Length: 101
Image 1 (cartoon, helix red, strand yellow):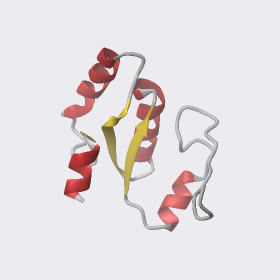
Image 2 (cartoon, rainbow, N blue to C red):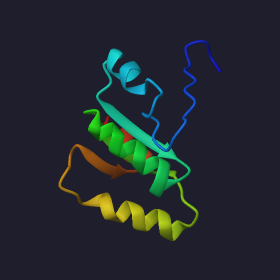
Image 3 (cartoon, one colour):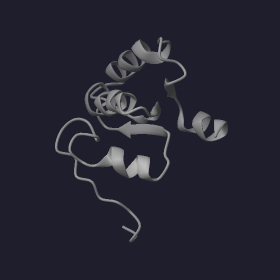
Image 4 (tube, rainbow, N blue to C red):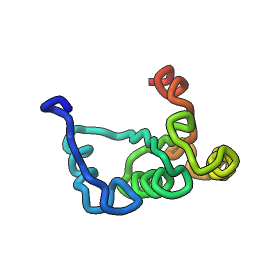
């Protein structure tokens, strides 16, 4: 870890729950959260929903997340691909997000 890196142990499913993440991000002027992780339908989705609730635009990086099976991962993300929260909430690949930024 570099000195400027943050270590925020996550006590629950969402990375926003009791970690101070919202304050850290807002203090740095962040407006978009790109979410990745190892449990698409649990931790990744909980963090993404909390990100939206804290007024961040949110992207789940589909190629940087996974689930117990590829089918579970795909089914979870397919539920949110076309949603009424677009463009506040999107499913994208990391390459597409980098290209867009």
